[in-house]
Amino acid sequence: MATNLTVSPVVKPWSLLDRLKTGLVVLIVADVIFLIVLLRAHGEYAGILKTITVDSEPSVIAAQQIKVEMAAMDADAANELLAKPGQATAALADYEKHRKEAAKALIAAANNITYPGEREPIESIQTNLGDYEARIQHALDLHEEGDKRAVIVYRQASDLMNAHLYLAADRLADVNRAELDKAFDLYTNGAAQTRAEVFAAGALLLGLLLFAQWDLVRRTRRLLNPGLLCASILTIALLSYCSTHLSKSASDLRVAKQDAFDSIHALWQARADAFAANADESKYLLPDNMQAADEKSFFARADSTRDFLKKEMNNITFDKERDAADDASKDWEQYLKIDKKIRTLNTSGHAEDALALCLGTNYGQSDYEFEYFDKALMSTISVNQVEFDKARDSSKAQLQNLPEVASVGTAATAVFLVFGLLLRIREFL
Image (cartoon, rainbow, N blue to C red; front, top):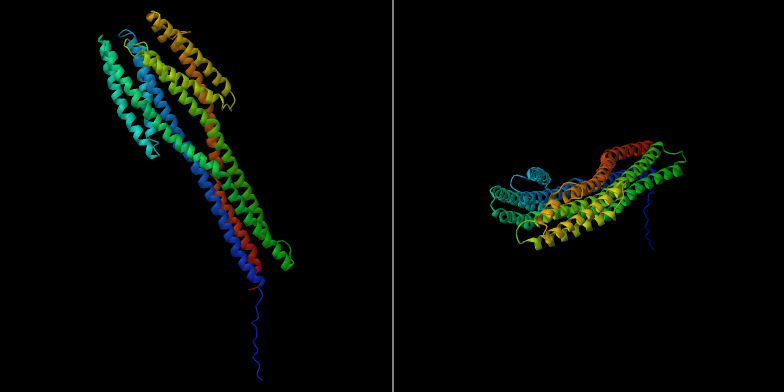
């Protein structure tokens, strides 16, 4: 009887040479992955930093400054109409100064257009501000001639300011603030995950290097492989460097946004509302029948200013910030007390005294106290702006050389591990 014998094929064991070749490929791939993760992390951090500190923050401030300067123009024009023709030269000079500053801020905003929603409010401001200035000039000409229609024409200009110009400036600020908040939310939600990915990629490469080192020692009974040892040390150093710099950049960005910018924004909003309220105070004394509307607008803006100042007081972070913010809040309350006196004098038949108190620049008078309030407010803004700039620059510096360090570090790691394994591979050739 015949018997069929089936001989099983002999499976050749995976040789050390095969392990070395495979290990070399796996290590190079892990090294490349580490580089890709590092470069992606840098790109994400740098992109968020640019959005917040370059694309958005300057435009938010420019929009609020435009509103401040326009409100100051409106107040100066009203002050000119409250005085006798030819006697308010200081108001006219101040009007011209603020007109130029508004133009500069508008140009700055136009030169930093990044988002689709910015163009429309900028164009609206440009168009309507020209119309406003023309109407104001007409009103001033009529006032110079002693024509009572000057107040009517001024009211038309002021209505344009309230109905279009202020709102356009707010839209410009809101567009940029929304993009800034979106970028920071992205950072908040993704920064930790990004750093975790960097750590995971670095740990993977390091783990594979240590395993390859251990496997060689176990199978060849030799001392540590110099190439793999250098590659391991370099990976640890690179992982430590990149993790530290990414963490520091993230910390600086948080300071720039939450500690500094949130205060800067609240303070500029307070300043814009305060200047608009100051214009309402002057308009209240104009000889027409709009006092009730002016008074309502004034109190609404005064309350808004107070709310923004309170928001700043809840976000005190830096040295000298509290003292400056306290001064601004106290000066604003003092300004409101003087305003109350103005209204009392006006309603009790002392219109000339009310006018003198409103336009006066001496101690205890409205414009004097408003100027002191604005100086304290700008001092508070300055403290936060300096800290914002420092945090921005520090965050940028942490990221500046990271791509080069990552590229050189991973390239050097690849050279060392290739050198280390090729020494072993050549023994089989």
